[in-house]
Image (cartoon, rainbow over all chains, first blue to last red):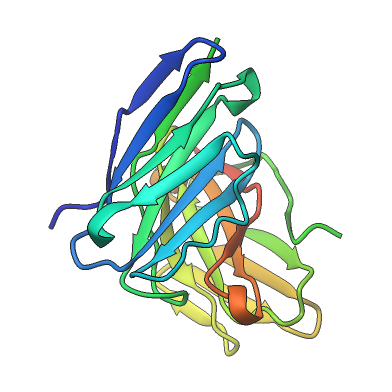
Length: 114
Length: 112
């Protein structure tokens, strides 16, 4: 079946612009995660959605970052007023339910802020 | 102490070699442990979960030592296709147990 998909695969933007990244999880997966991977760094947890529960936003690095998940499926991660330090690969993952279920990752969106 | 710490490598080994990776974690209450594999410019993929009794999947063996908060991955008879970054992954405890903490990874290159 189809895996996790993300779009765009690459995004180049100018400092100060807003960007929107999209994640389409595996059908039927109720848990969705966003991570960020900077060069030479490990994956950094950003936000977690589980069904209709309030999301865990504790990993978002600043109030310029926000995310939504509509209808329990597709999610968008929005970065406002982008900064150069936002340049990274943004990875989305989904799992059937909560932890101890395998997380399946999408291919990521490579964001470059000039 | 970092939450999850790995030797970054790189490890360069010839085909057929046996190679071992180690990982330490700081949260003694962690319950779930994994090894993920990440190919260059690709997404991470689960290689195997790590169980208390140790587990084996073909050429790969994972061990967990809770007392020492230490996880290992052993790869026997290395193949060229094993070249990748290996990520040690641990869940957080309690109500946030859905959060996975990833190590920075150990880079392995298997040479012909």
